Image (cartoon, rainbow, N blue to C red):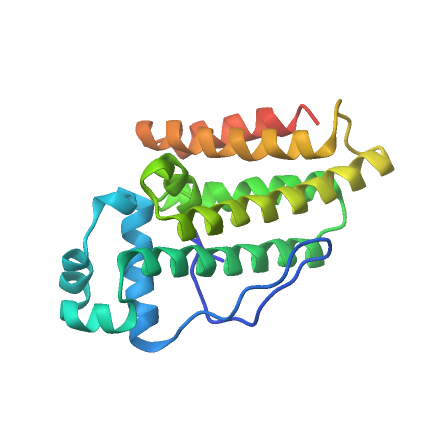
Length: 210
């Protein structure tokens, strides 16, 4: 994938040890709407745009938007599902391409760096900052995204500990949560400075501890 998570139509992906796959994403006008909304969320946040912004960007009527997504909450829920589907596909790609756990962790961090290089944030990281104001279905989907990331990272960490290629104290799940939290936080700070290198340095230092 290129510098930003470029969403494509794909079959549902299920990664070993992870939950049920998501449904395929919509196509056509609905997909265009989701693409525009995703860009807005990743740059402004969910509360930072309206249907009027999407309609203007795509030269659509607001009636057309409401036809495909009757409420903004439903649009947000499908955005998260779509984001998770492609993110899990990228993790599956890592599993197929790489066997060494440390390299898997490095490539995981690179997903975040690639998004940041396009001046975007992780969609669910942005939403987490707005958690208190999100509709419940969006909250549930957002937590599911992070749960799936934790499962994948926990498995990679367990593999690394078993082979001796990774060394860390405590439970693998706790370490997985620390990795996600550190990467999401590093993205926010690096974006505020406009320096991807700041994120990459933080990620390298984080992974060196394993």
